[in-house]
Length: 180
Image (tube, rainbow, N blue to C red; front, side):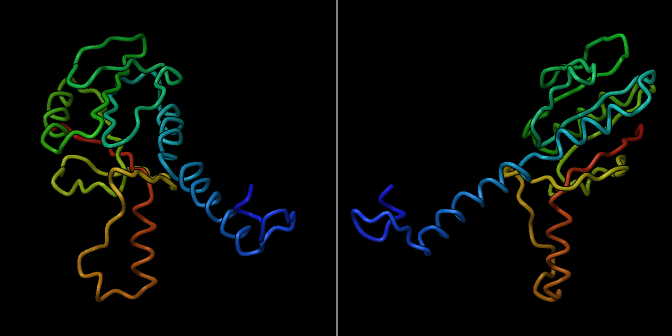
């Protein structure tokens, strides 16, 4: 390709152009190959390690829907609340719904004594959800829909503290939600 060569006809590759080309390809490789939605599969593996005999519902919020068949979960479309399986596990994908839809879904699924799990990127603010507490965090995970944000008062934080807060948000959290 002509971009990498210093002048027409030469086969010698320009060092700065080669470095730029490598960087141009390395950044998306790391971003999309290692970070983007990386916590989905890891959360699926963690959830599959739970006792398969207990009835539970898993709500996926602001993330990709995992291939739940590998967990023997039944997948319910958005808004659907009925689904039976041998293990009595359900999966509800809320995609990019707002917090009101999440609260309604959690309320509708806390009855009946089943365990209720919420899986969401740590970068999503769930401060209003007092019924859920984080039980597991998976790193790395980056969602392009909810990028990490600077904490309040960021101008007064040291660069190291600020970096730590941003890196902390590059994760997927699993919450156990109590009955209201």
